Structures are given as structure tokens and as C-alpha cells.
Image (cartoon, rainbow, N blue to C red):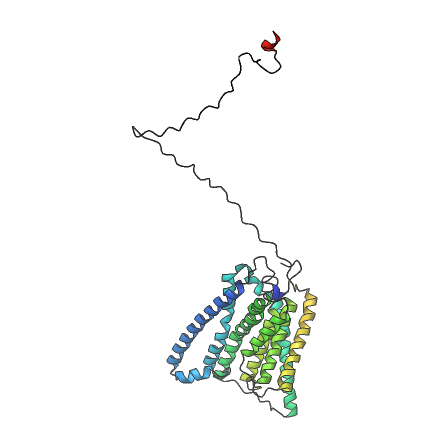
Amino acid sequence: MSTSTTSYPRLARESPDFAHWKLPVAAVVGSFLYVVLVVVLVIVAVVGVAASGTSFDTWLDGTDSDIALDDPGLLLFQLATIAVLLPCVVLAVALVWRRHVGYLHSVEGHLRWSWLGRCLALAFLVVVAALGLSVLVAAVAGDEPVSVEAPGGRALAALAVVLLVVPFQAAAEEYVFRGGLMQLIGSWTRWTAVPVVATSLLFAAGHLYSFWGLVSVFAFGVIAAVLTIRTGGLEAAVALHVANNIVLMVLDIVGVIDSSGEGAGLWNEVVPSTVMCLVFWALVEWSARRRDLQRRRPPLPALAPAPAPAYVVVPPPPYVPVAEGPGPALPTPPAVPAAPQPVVPPNAPSYPGDPGVWGR
């Protein structure tokens, strides 16, 4: 294990009890949990569709489309199928590697709630300003006339779903791509750029957008990954993701913009979105310096050795049967013959040097 401080992608690798199999097994366990929860959601949705009298085929076709902001029930199902990834990731790591689960949140081993709140405030400020500016520019240029629609009953229900479920949906994506996957890939390679690029490609592949829309999502993923590394935790990336999704969907529901990604191009989607993320990054760096935020983890202490047993088990002596009563006598061991004694002549002195008979 390295003796220097550890960055977020290397938190798993530079742990005293690290093993290469732990996070991959956690990924398998999390995938299994996700399948189970999605099956439960599908059963609940089928019961709800049947109770409402809606055609199941029509509902099923709608699940393959973009986010259904005009259908609150379908919108809830679509967002919930993503949001359930959050408990799957955390629970899977807790089951396989309990000591490490806190380091999914940050280098401090827990979610930094005050830092998350500060990042949320900055993220909403930047996203609202950026999208408001883009809408204003489009209105001045005459490309897209702005018209705000008064929300009806279905729109109000969709707004409630967005405000209640999108924070968990956005956080779930961050915990999957910038959390578990980045630490998993980061534990198998020494180059930080590999998990950053790999997770951003996977993140973009999970969106059904046009080419430039996918480029914009990939750039978002790269900046979110760098934010995670620079701040030592997922809070800033989660805040940016939550603010971006909520503001986009709310403006779409009220008819100000189209958040489906159709018609996205380099200048009207990729550049404005990337600049927005870079501005947020700069503000986060400024705030982190003022707060003196912990960005890296100090070396963890070595694992304590296993305690010695309180007592030592001594095996019993070999069993020797004892004859009871007039049974057969035990065999007598053979006698050992005595060593032969030297023959001393009768006229020899008693000890060497004693004249004995020789001095007579």
C-alpha cells in the first residue's frame, strides 16, 4: 500500500484489506439486486396499468421512448428504474466489503452533507443562469419563441415526480459511474485517465441521444469525474447532475425548452453545456479552497493481527488400556543384558599410580 495520500479512484486499491475480487463481486451482487428491484417495479406498474384501464401494449411502447414528461405515471416508473441503482450499489459494497462502503461517498469515509448543500446551491445558481441565458439568446435571435404554459393537473403531477425522484435518479447514476465503477477500474490500473474516460463512455452509452447529444453527455461525464477526483468525493458531481436534470425537466414541462436532445448540435448544445460545467467546476474549486476541503485520504492503519486464543488446547496423553480383574497378563518387556565388565588381573593395582603389589 502507498504511504502517500490517496485520491478517490485509488481508495479501494490503497486499502489494507484490498483484494482484486471484492469490487467485481460487489458489481455482480449489485446487478442481481437491481434485477430483483426492477422486477418488483414492473409488477407494481402492471398492476397500476391494469387498474387504470390503460392498454398494456401502449404503456409498454412508451417505456422505450424518451423521458415521458407528459405522463406522470410512466415518468415515475422510468425514473424509479434508475433511482433503485443507488441502494443496489451501496448495499452490494456493504455486503461484500463492509469496511470500504463509506469511501464510496468521499475520502473522509462518509457523505459530507454540508459540502453537498453548498455544491447544490452553486449548481442551481449556475444551471439556472446558463439555461436562462440560452433561452434569452434564442428568444432575441428569434430561433425559438419562448412560451410558458400554465401547468395543468398532469403537469403538476409530473413536476412533483421530478422534484421528488430526480435527486435519487441523478445520485444513483453518479454512484454507479463516478463511484463504484471508477473505483473498480481505478483499482486495476495506475493511470487515472483510464477510469475517467471509461466511465464517461459508459455513461454516454446509457443515453438515447443524437451524436452531438452523446458528445455533450460524454463531456459532462468527464467533468463530473474530474470534479469527483478534485474534491475527493461524489458531492459536487451529484449536485451538478441533480440541478441540471431538475431545471431541464421543469423548463420542459412548462414548455420553455425541449430536453429530449433532439436537434442538439455543437454550438447549441455541446459548447453551452460544457461551459456551464466548467464554470461550476471553477466555483467548486474556489469554495473548496475557502473551506479547506479534504481532497485525499491519509494512509489507513494496518489491520490489527488476529487476537491470540485465550487458552491452548493440549491433546490428551495416549490411551493405555488397564487390565481389570484376572484377565490376561500384559507381556513383560525383555530384560536388557548387563554390559560386560572388564576382567582385572588379581595382581593389578587398585587405581593407576597406586604401587599396589608392585611396590612391595
